[in-house]
Length: 84
Image 1 (cartoon, rainbow, N blue to C red):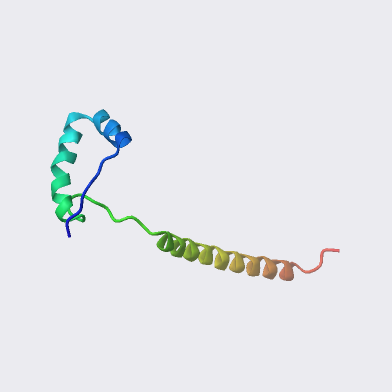
Image 2 (cartoon, rainbow, N blue to C red):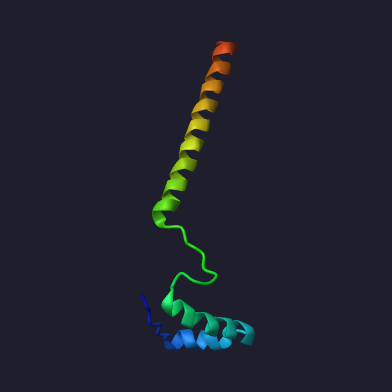
């Protein structure tokens, strides 16, 4: 599937600020990307769902660690017995 790329005025202004070497690289990449948008040195971005899944796994690990730590503290307090 072919794509058409339209560069807005502000983007053109930013493009002109790039070093000549980078401008040439972009100019070379655009025609290829018109034919195959996934060509070149692109990197797949995480989706919000993927990031949320990672965060949820991290939170589950933290919750489990907190539960285990609380159980250990309760055992220590129970072992020490009443101090009064």
